[in-house]
Image (cartoon, rainbow, N blue to C red; front, top):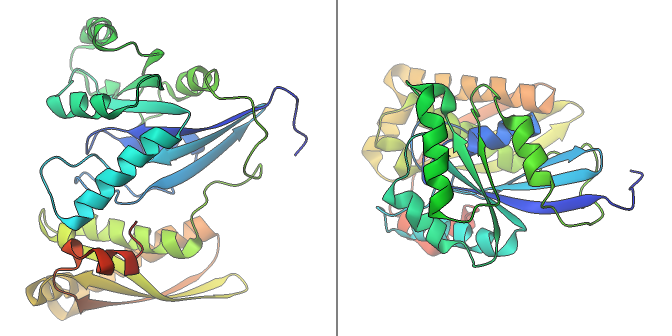
Amino acid sequence: MNVPDAFRCGHLAIVGRPNVGKSTLLNRLIGQKISIVSRKAQTTRHRITGVLTRPGQQFIFVDTPGFQTKHKNALNRMMNRGVTQALHEVDVVLLVIEAGRFKDEDRRILSLIPEGKTVLLVINKIDRLDDKKRLLPFIADMAKTFPFAEIVPVSAANGTGGEALLDAAGNYLPESAPLFGEDDLTDRSERFLAAEFLREKLFRRLGEELPYGMTVEIERFETEDSLRRIHAAIIVDRPAHKAIVIGKAGEQLKAIASDARRDLEALYGGKVFLEVWVKVKGGWADDERALKSLGYE
C-alpha cells in the first residue's frame, strides 16, 4: 500500500451494554459479517477486531462483549476484564446506546472509560423510534451528560448514519502508518470464526436460557484447496442439554450445522464439510482453566 504522509490509523473500541447492536454496527461498518449477532445478551464473548481501510485512513474496530452486571461467573468476569482492558488500550471509544434510552448500565460503562479518552456517542436503532421528533431532544439531553467528542445517530440494521460515523471518528485517529493490509478484515483466524458462526446458530435456534451454558470447540480444521474440513464439538454444561441440542432424531443438530455451514461457505468463498457433535463438560463457564483451554481470555 502506498501510504501518504498524513495517513491516520487507530484502534476504536465499540462498547455498550448487551443488546444495543455493537456487533451489528461492526459488521455494517466493515461491510462483512465477522462478529456474530443474535437478539440474546452475551452473544459476543470475545474481543473481535474488524479492519476497514479507506483512502488515508485505517480503522481497527474492537467489538467487545456487553458489560455484564447481573452474572458473576468466571466467564462473565473474563468478559468484563476484556471490556475494561479495551477501554484503556484504544485511541477512541464508541459508546453505543439505544435511541431514546439511557439506562443505569449505560452510565456504569461511561464511568469505566479512562479520563481524557476521546468518546463518541453512537445512538443506535433510530429506525425503531416511534416518534422521530424525540431524537433531537434526546441528543440535546445526552450532550449534557458527558463531554462527548461527537454524537452520531445511526441505524446499524439498515446502514443509516454509517458514513457520518466513519467521517466523524476518522478525525480522531492518530497519524500512523496502517497496521493491516488494505484487504484485511480481521485479525481472527478462520478456525476462530468457524466456532463463532456455529455458536451463533445455537443462540438463534435454541431457547432463552440454554445457549449461556454452551460453547464451541474446533477440534480439527483442515484446508484442501478451497475445501475446509471442520470438526467441531458443542460443549454443554449438563447431560439434559445434550438431548435438547441434538433434538428428536438429531434434527435440531442437523439444522444448526446446516445453517452454520452455509454462512461459513459465504465467508470463506468455498465448500465446507462440517461435522458437529455434542459433549458434556460440567461447570466449564465457572472454571478459568477450562475457559482458557477453550480459547477465552
